[in-house]
Length: 241
Ligand code: HEM
Image 1: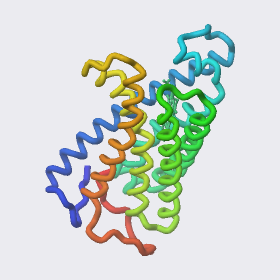
Image 2: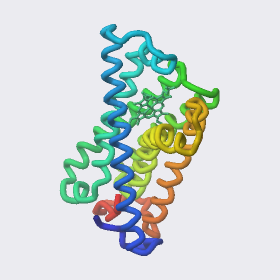
Image 3: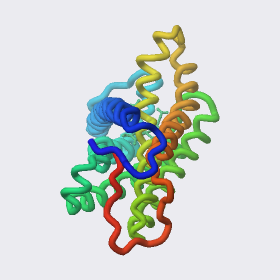
Image 4: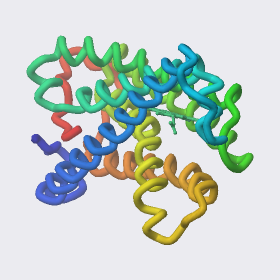
C-alpha cells in the first residue's frame, strides 16, 4: 500500500498504520451493510410474492413497501461491493481502464442510492424521532452532491479534488454501516437497552462521525498545493485510498 509522499502532514509510519486500520474497518463495514442489503432485498422479494406474514411494527413497514425498499437496498448492495474497489491504489494505477469503468458504475450506483434514500425518507414511515427524517434528507442530498462534484472534477482532470469528493460521498453512504454496528453491537453493551433510543442516537451521530473521519483522512493525505487547474499530463496522485 503506497502512502502519499509530497507534503504529508503525518509521519509515514503513522499514515501506514491508519491506512491499514482504515482498510480493515472499511471492509468490515462494507460486509455488514452488504449482508443487510442482501437480506432486506431477499425479504422484499418474498413480500412481493406475498409469502411473508404480518410482522412486528419495525419490519411490517418493509413488508408493506417492498418496491421502495428494493429501490434502496439493491443500489446499496452494489455500493458496498463496488465502493472499496475504487480506493484500491494498484487498480487505479495499473488498471486505469478497470478503475474508470467500475468508477462510472459506482458513481451511477452512488447517485441512485442517494436519490433512493431521499425518496425512501419522504415516502416510507421512518422509524424513531422526527429529526431522523431531516437528518436522512440532508445526508442523502449531500451524498448525491458529493458524487456529482466528484464526477465534474474527474471530467476536468482535477484528480486530487475528484479523490476528495469520492471519499466524502463514500463516507456518507458507508455511515449507514457504522450506524448498524453502533445500533446492534456497541450501544447495547453500553447498557442502552431501548431500541428506539439507540436508533435515534445512531441516526444523529453516524453521518457526522464518518464525515469527520473522512475529512481528517483527506487533510492528512492532501498534497500541500492541491491542483485546481485542469491537468493535461497529470498522473493519478499516489494516495493511500
Ligand atoms: C445518505 C445515504 C443514506 C441514507 C440517508 C439512507 C437512509 C435510509 C433510511 C431512512 C432507511 C429506512 C430506515 C427505517 O427503517 O426507518 C434506510 C434503510 C436501509 N438502508 Fe439506507 N440510506 C443511505 C444509504 C444506504 C447505503 C449506501 C446502503 C447500503 C450500502 C443502505 C442500506 C440500507 C438498508 C439495508 C436498509 C434497510 C434497513 C433494515 O433492514 O433495517 N443505505 N436507509
